[in-house]
Amino acid sequence: MDNIINGFNKQKIGQKNEIEFWLSQMLAKIPGTGLNQKIALQWLHQDKFIIILDGLDEAKESHRSELIIKLNHLLEDLSSPVIICSRTADYEALAVNDKMKLNLNYNATIQRLNKEQNNKLS
Image 1 (cartoon, rainbow, N blue to C red):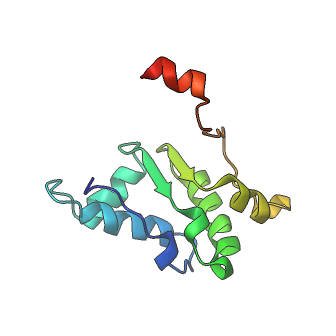
Image 2 (cartoon, one colour):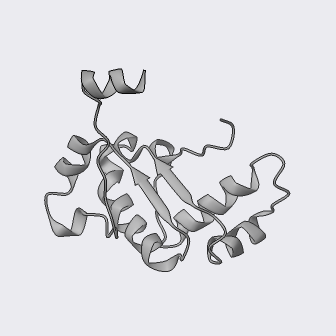
């Protein structure tokens, strides 16, 4: 899928709103949308997107703590729904104290199907 944006492992996030700026840049680059960065940034604050950020566990270890803090600011500032994906073990290792936990409304764990469940779907 061409419209998936993944940049956790390439970004060192600095300013509080840098993630919003980065998201608006990425959204403006999606072919066929006709979005420019200014409109994309406005739409981020107008609940026009469902934001799915995959690869938190792929971010450089030295950046993960800072990234969690910035993602929490993003979660506070935006009205758009945000989904953040990570391998469970990697996130749990990072979230050993409350400052390093994401302030999410909900969380979910996706698990493999057992043989019986898999056979029912076949």
